[in-house]
Image 1 (cartoon, rainbow, N blue to C red):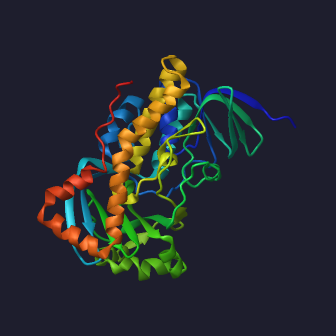
Image 2: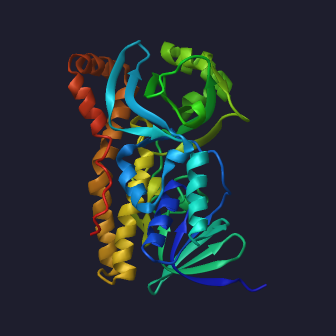
Image 3: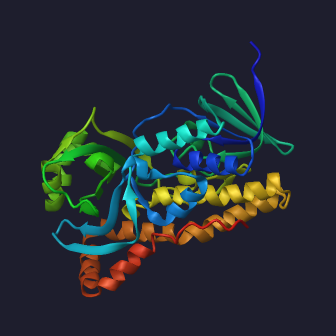
Length: 382
């Protein structure tokens, strides 16, 4: 049977938050775009599900209003350590809590209503020759496109084929589930709890559900054998987290998890593909702002694609170099701050010294949190 070949302007590989946002942007800009995504909607994903309000102007421009999904309104951050220390601060700009189950489904439905094609298939190979991409899927379909956006994350088989894939010296595992809380959990609070070998984020999403998502060193997690034992023996070492877990009842079938996570540096352009979201670099969950970065990277890449493909203002090489530079300027400092905060949390001695200093100078803690957040995403073009 002969493979079907489709000619496209832009192909987005991956239909997570970054990929769906990019497709919405390109469609609004009058460009033909197709999304290839392996899994259907709706679905749960391992994610802290906190989004900084910096994304709201951009989503307004895209014609997306998440208020219909009744997200939580998040305003404060609370950070606790194993030793019992607590720091609190206001979140820069504030944010909202919304499950990826609801958010991605909404974006997908809006794309369909606007005539954007979403193909459910797994990409097996991407090649580039003579200014065109050829993308082959598991079903045998072949797509040819002028531009390809890589939004397939850090864990896909396609990502692992990359020439510059970062390898983790100490890989991590992440686990997430939604819970019902027995009591009055502070609805406007994002709490981050340090435990031996990792961090756990807790905050409300829609329908009064509590998102509990944690990241742990894989070696430490493996010793426990399973999620239940790890939570009982390790997570509950933090007394604040223990109280939350003991008053929470899981909703649905159970936790979802991903392993072998790497937080190494990644190129924003690889084999002429523009990488967005986690594909371009996974920010440490301690910063709780990966979703806003995914949205921001989609916006930056799409503006350059429009200038290159629709308006003819840029050559491909210039588009690629500008994107790499823009990505570094927008997210480089945030990634660095995330790595520093992560390293700080892993050292009991350093953490104790830092907590003592931050306790004396609360404005310093506020500045640290601000360093992991951006300004409102405005629509200014190039």
